[in-house]
Structure formats: structure tokens, C-alpha cells
Amino acid sequence: MTGPTPALPTPTLRTPRLRLRPFADDDAEALSALMSDARVLRHWDAPPWTDPGRATQFLARCRQLADEGSGARWVVAQADGGAFVGWCSLSRWDPTNRSAAVGYVLAERVWGRGYATEAARAVLRWAFDTLDLHRVQAEVDTRNAASARVLQKLGFVLEGTLREDCVVAGEVSDTWVHGLLRREWRPDDVTT
Image (tube, rainbow, N blue to C red; front, side, top):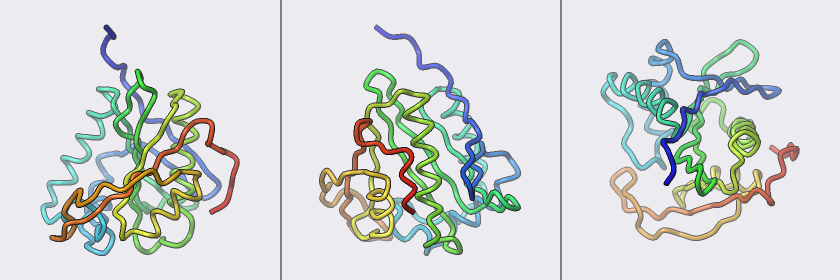
């Protein structure tokens, strides 16, 4: 029998264009603006936020994930100037099976610049190196071709489709499941 999962402090990660840092209380306003944008969340399995209190709950959950050792969430900020452009996460960390899931949400104003790929690559590098992961999984609404391309650039393989898996914006939707194994991981591939 194994003991409790240790805490998982969220480190600051840097890339040439981005700084991924732990969430702070003063991120609530930018987070709320992002997560209330219906266009940004059009493929998300939860509706856009309408209650400003959701940001406070999200920030508390960030601390809880780190404390219980089940995951980490980062603010994705531009390295030059520090502007909040989104967030990235590593969740469902399972040290026994050496697995986790990755996710990301970015503001529409930065779409198409390769930020999602760059941010997720930084998280994956940290996760494979620090947590000694064997597998990382990501799920994407089948209508979200841009996110599927991000995963493909990172080396993920489409493993299957969860049919009518969730309801997105009132419509029943399918979900693609992508997986990345340690032996497939290419941390130095800079294709964006």
C-alpha cells in the first residue's frame, strides 16, 4: 500500500516567449475575463463563467491541486511585459502509473501564434523530467481542429474517440483522446 501523494509545488517555467507561473490572487480579473469569453470556451465542456466568484473558486482549487499533489496550473504570460494570455494545466497526476493529463486555454487575441504549443511543451518537459512520467493524455472536442493540431505538433497520437462524451454549448459532442508516451516525447522539437 502506498502513502499519500506528496505536495506538488507549481514551479515557474520559462520559454523564449512565455513565462508560466503559479496563479496568484490578483489574476482573478484576467482569469474571469478569459473564462467568461464564449468564443474561447466554444469547445469547452462547461459553459462560460457568468459569476465573478468562479475565479476565486478556481484559484482555491489551484492551491488544493498543488497541496494534495494531484496536479498543477500555470498562468501563461508573455515573457515581454507579463501580459496574461491564458493558462495551462497538468492534472490527474498518478505517480503509481506515472501518468497525467495536460490542458490549456488561451485568449483569442493570441491564437495562431504557437503559444499553446510552446506553453504545453514547457509543461511536458517539466512533467517528463521532474515527475518521471510514462504517459500524458489530452482530450479535445472533435470540432476543435486547432487544439488537435497543437497536440500533433507535440507528438501526441490520436488514440480514439469517446462518442457523445459530453455536452458542449448545449450540443452532445464527441471527444478525441490523444496520448503521448515517454519514448515518443521529443522535447527539443521546436515546431510551432
